[in-house]
Length: 564
Image 1: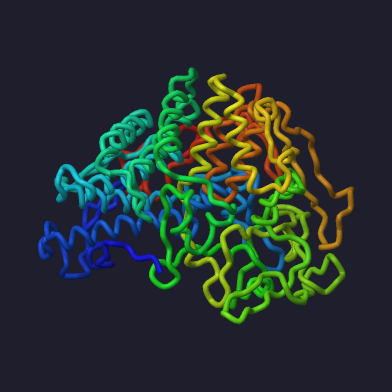
Image 2: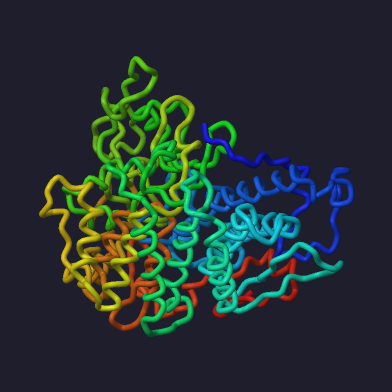
């Protein structure tokens, strides 16, 4: 069980923090607990509000349609297709096809929880001393949340206090101002955060990671060139690697267990708990209901998300991350052990006859998928995401901690900066190789060279889908296919390694936008993949500001390229 030091007051205190992007011109009070009736300067109340700020950060990530979905559903690795005979589709299809608008549900969810987190942090900081660990933690959460808002929207309201006159409207500022604010805040709090490793709480090295992410993406955020910010990112991750006393976990999956508090690799985590902080719903979103038996899970999954077939094909067959991350083929019942734990996929095949493409009568996930929505995906189509440990009984993944930042990420950032700077490229290749070694039995297979990392991608890009109906119908006449490949992607080998290592870790959208084709377009826009077409439009690198937020705050201006 993972416990927070700060215990929340729940709904009572939650009424005290305003959403920084809303007008909040009139508040209906449903409780007698308000700013006037609660002493918000009381130490216990402030501690409770700090706990609520951490809770909102959890909600940002794992609320329904939250930050995980925002970063992954629009990528070339993971999708949630329309499931024929089941459901799904709608907003997930829009995310996959990059056809979203300002009413996309994912955007409003992220925006609201982000500003709720900022509101609680502001409320605490209005009362906390100007220095010390507590204020540094709140400033870290606030700055890291603003970094995520910057990454998604660029131009957002920037508010650093909850003390306002009646009728106040948060004012939108440029992305450059948000960037500068995040940098100044994180630099200012490094010393106060300290260097101790306390699970679930940020330290100096967590601040270094957020700074490194800001610097690494500066050029793509602001259509800039030059190498200054790669130098800055390199400085930040060098501090982590050299001074942070982190080490790679022995096993890749040690970073994705239910409890990762003992992982030597995790720099900053979001702790979850099945009873007190239950959020991670991936087990239900991904598996067929009958497939729960493969892990001894007693819940009833909903049969939604799966892998993009082209991504599965990009793996080296000897890369253990393929089977660590995805399950495909025939599924087998878990065996319960004497201590109450389960050994997954160790028993008899699981009977399942719906859309029985294999003709075996057993649940068999196919690598192939018909389409995202035309006609969609049949029930047994698509490899399923199982990287986050599935715990037997009724736990599933609901209590699984999140490794928000880990050492492998810092090592990859260092390698990328060295390659982009043209410095010490052999060291860059050695860093990627070191991370890969735990996932290969052969050192030769694990080894990557600088030339490979700087070269093209192995991903077989191009539009692919089968439009014919019928789970056994793979008629070539219904196959829609274009050939683009990945040879024109700069540093495409590194982009591949980023996907294999960090799939499902809120990485892929940002990486696809940062990496460019030789014609200057981002991979995010410039490449086609399963049911998603390439475009010359660049505005899609930034999401639209949610319509509900525009309606609530008349001072907000929509991002370029979007109608409202």
